[in-house]
Image (tube, rainbow, N blue to C red; front, side, top):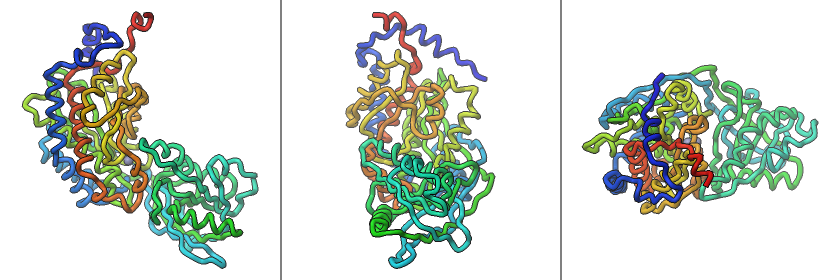
Length: 472
Ligand code: ZN
Ligand code: ZN
C-alpha cells in the first residue's frame, strides 16, 4: 500500500482559493503556454489516427474474451513499445465468455418474410432449428413488467420503444434499460424469447447488439434486437392481427475466458507516485470493427500521452494510459483494475475515459471536490478556444473509469458530440471510415492539454471546500 503524503502537504500549503478566483491567476503561465502548445500539436497529430486505423484494420472486431481480443493486447503491446512508452504491461483477468454462432428471424404464417435481427450479448440459444411463437408487443420495459401473469406464457415479448437522438447521448440511458432487462422480465412471465427495437437512432436494416443482464455468460432467455425498419414492420403487422415469429439463435458460451487490461505509462518527475489516468476500451462488439467504439478512444488517449511524453521535460505526475479489456460485456476491465489497484486509489488524482466515438468535444464536465472548482474553471477556460463549453460538476468519468469515479476519484468528461453516435454504435457499420480526422484531432488536443495540466500543476482535485468559505 502506498501512502501519498504529498497532496495533503500541498493542499495545506495552498492558500484557500476564493470562489471567484480568476483562473488566470492560478494557472502558471509557463504551464498554460505548454498546454497551448500541446493543443496546437494535437490538432495536427497523426499518431492517434494511425493507431486507430491499425487496430481496426489489423485486428478488426475484438469481442471480449475472444482470440481476437488476445491478439489486440499483443498488438497494443508492440505499438506502445514502438511509441517509446517507458512502461507497457498487461494485467490479466478472466470473464464469462459468450459469442454468437447463428441468428435468424422470420415472420411465419400468411405474411412470411425475414426480419433483420442480432442476438444480444448473453442471449441463450433457442432449441436447435429454432422456435416459433406468437409475439406480444409492449412499448417499454415497465409496460412489460406490468403485464398480467399469463400474458406471455409460451410467447415472445417484443419491446418496441424508440430511442431519442440527443447531442449528449442522453437518450441512451433510458433506451438501454430494455436491452438489459427484457429477457429476465419476459422470463418471469413465462415468455420463450425476447425481441427489442434496437437501441439506436438510425433507420437502416442494421440491428444494434449490446450486452444484457446475466449471471455468468448467459441471460434468462434467447434475446435479440430488431433493426429499426424491422421493428416498424413487425409493429405494423401486429396492428393487423396476431403474428408468429420464427427465431433461431445459436450461441457458444463458457464459464471463463482470458481478458486483460493493457497499460502504458509516462513516468512523472517530482510527483511520480501520483497518477493521472486516461483510458479507453480495447474490446469491441463483433459486428463491425469497433472503430468509434472504441478504437478511436484508444487512439485519442494514446496520442495525447505520446505528445506529453515527447516533451523535453517530464510532467510532475505519472500519466497512466489504460486500454481496458471486456468493457462491453460488463465493465470487467474497469472492475478488475479497481480491485488490483484498490490500495492506490488515493494516488489517482484524476481519471478520464474516451468512449463515445470520435466526434468533437463540445463540453467539459468535471467531478471535483467543492474546493477545487477554480481548477475546473481553469481547465474549461484553457480548452475554450477548441470550441468547448463548460459543463457541470457531476462527472464520475465514462465507462470503466466510472468504477474509480464512483469510489471518489476525481474525474473529467470531455463530452463528445454524439448526435449521430447511436446511428452506428454496436452495428456492422462501426468502421474506420466513419471517423472525421479533424474532429478526432480536436479530441487529441483536448486530452493532451488537460492531461498535461493535471499532471504538471500538482493540483488536488479532491479538495473539499473550506468550512470558513462556506460560512461566508
Ligand atoms: Zn464503448
Ligand atoms: Zn459499446
